[in-house]
Image 1 (cartoon, rainbow, N blue to C red):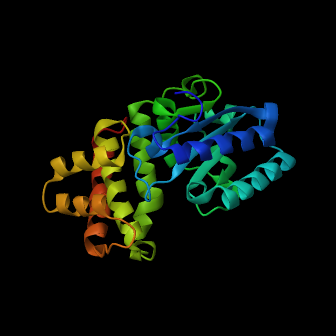
Image 2: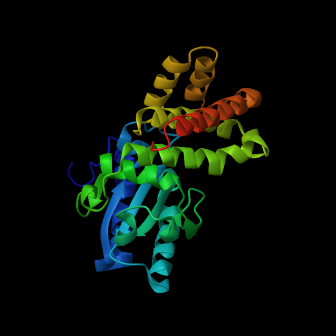
Length: 265
């Protein structure tokens, strides 16, 4: 696509152009590339529900002055860029750290979806995110992401999916406070679908494709829960906590069993 036609959404393209201009101004020659991933790249974007995920690749670790310029840029964009700028979420990775995920080198500057900016840890989920950037990332500037990210094997994707389930979702079986939100319950259901898909297939797809796979695989009554999660929109009720917890528990059990039966996966 040509400039300002990166996506099918003209207003998003305007925000992406402003993001690119801002990052280039803040970092100059330190910027290697800027990419859009997530649902916009994989084909599952839903206006009003999805975030806009981006990745800025830098030649080296950003120094405090460069980070401060990036923070100021994001504040301006957040204040002036309208509703689409408010759902930007992304990370600034030095190219050496991006090549292959290393948990010992995983603290990098990040813009959170709430608009805050800090040095954040990037856990097992980053393996899945970087896979999508490599597979279908939209290039705003820089080389093809395949030149920056090493191939990620299906076994690595499966291990990452298990890691996310164990690190993030297993504790929610004991502390359900986050899952009291209608939005987070719907998000949890679709995340379990994506986790199950990755565990079964060693690949990452959109939440819609993963949901269709899980519905066919699991059947009723789980298929109905998934259908409700797919159709959920802000303002809708989604009060299915016992069913959501059971789905999380079932997915964790499958992850454990698949790991025990084939430790190399």
